Amino acid sequence: MLRVEETEIPDVKSVWLSPHEDSRGMFVEAFETEAFEAIGVNSRFVQDAVSVNHKRGTFRGLHYQAPPHAQDTLVRVTRGRIFDVALDLRRSSPTFGSHVSTVMSDEEWRWLYIPAGFAHGFCTLEDGCEVSYKLADHYAPDHASGVRLDDAALAISWPIDPKDGILSEKDRSLPLLKDAQNVFP
Image 1 (tube, rainbow, N blue to C red):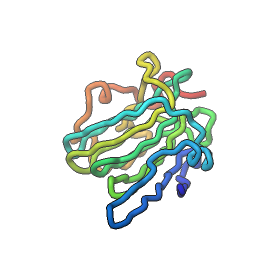
Image 2: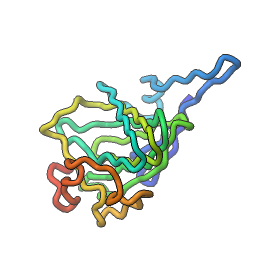
Image 3: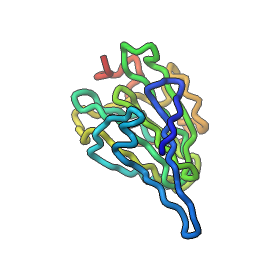
Image 4: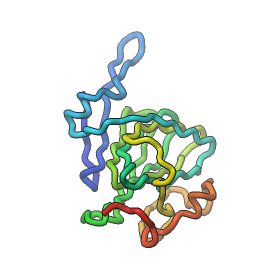
């Protein structure tokens, strides 16, 4: 059985899994379509991806795909601990420009559900982090974009200063939210 925890932005959800332990160890259904549909996650996930991050202070994001290839995303930490962020890019939303942040670790059995219309990013809080994703559309490079994670207008309280972190040149050159193209109507 899944347990859903609402976040400050109701469309973003923490989905807690139910591991079963006995003398042999532990078993958990990490994803089961009917169980997710029962909690309102009706996405058809078509791709799994994994991000391996060697060093503490590695930043990824804030990334999104614009329509018609927008992606609902499930994010789970399979090794380590991260500070995870989902940023609302839906211009018609009362929470446009707001974000949800949470610390996630491999010690908890939890997915973060991020619907299309949000950008996603994270910062690793320890060496050797691995993050697993389920994506509801295939990667479409012509529709892939992002927002600078150190945009002061976003007021994200990163636990590590992005200036001191490890970022790709692509992520460093992403636009500020006010200059972002292809955000959601």
